Image (cartoon, rainbow, N blue to C red; front, side, top):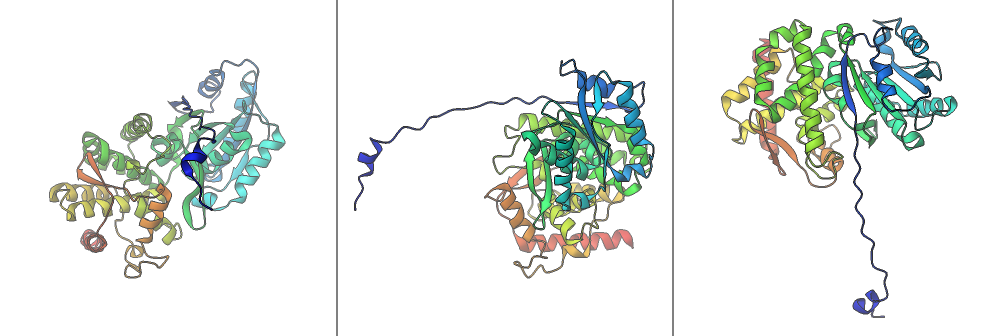
Amino acid sequence: MVIDIKQKSRFSLQPIHQRVSVTFNYEVYFTQNLFELKNPTLAQVITADGETKPKKVVAVVDAGILEYQPGLVKQLVAYTKFYAEVLAIAAEPMIISGGEAAKNDRTLVDQIQQQIEAAGLCRHSYILAIGGGAVLDLVGYAAATAHRGIRLIRIPTTVLAQNDSGVGVKNGINAFGKKNFLGTFAPPYAVINDSAFLTTLDDRDWRSGIAEAIKVALIKDANFFYFIHFHSAALVQRDMDTMQEVIYRCAQLHLEHITNSGDPFEMGSSRPLDFGHWAAHKLEHLTGYRLRHGEAVAIGIALDSTYSYLVGLLDYSEWQRILNTLSALGFTLYVPELAEKLSQLEHPDCLFRGLTEFREHLGGELTLTLLQRIGKEIEVHEVDLFLYREAISLLRSFSWRIEG
């Protein structure tokens, strides 16, 4: 049977076209000792919604914090009692293991959602997520999918979470051996950065968050990169004033991109804030998450900067300055997993599988961010794997020279 498409269309209903614009507002606050009774920041954040009755609150706490602040849960409960006219804790705070293991355990999402249901939270209630970036991602995913969205207040406790992951709009967990395979775009109600938490970090976690600052500086703000470069010794010595400047500027640049990029929920294929991340995400998996996220990002930045140099985009002196800055901060820029199975492109342990997974995550076309110069990025859609192999060899030689 032959169908006359033109004739058939005369009897079809015309599509209805509609465009919906949605505005999201949230504040990022900076404070110290958030749960001291004399600090009203959290209570003020909640009363800002203009509703008068006390709000139900459930808290999920990263267990790693309690090793250094064992009285945190009691302090939190005491705070809610002191500000009882504003907030009422609806259940015992939930303690979960932090780090990437939290994002690899899908049962934790169910447990958080069960607590939300049992506590009788509604869409005008609040979840406090207190912890590192992995815990914030996990809790954010659970909050975004319960009642289609419980108000989330992120309280990041690491450098990386305060300057990058905690101030964005993404939530997620790992699945099927892939980073952030399940997740949502759901802005938090508010973010509260408490600098006191940073004093409890070990050196690895203190350093890891600086990688994300270097990333955003390299693609957006050369002056910021040189600030980090010239203050690397102060950062290594854990100078808090310097770190606070780094966190503030990094968070500012991150939020400016989300606000002004025209694509806050990444509907397209352009993701400059993921500079260095295609390799970083794969390396985290290949090392069994032995590498912290920031440590993997530092290697990914070094790799993509080296590739940028090899293809003639980045000049030698800037390339070396990037590697030397990362090294001065204490980052290792080569691990054996970089070079394993490189000749077997379909092998799941081949680093270059990360390019395929990155393209799939973007939704079709491969789009990588490279560097034209410090502070100036460029997007490419094809790469030369031979040159990436050479880049890996150069990183190995650089690392041997530094270690030697």
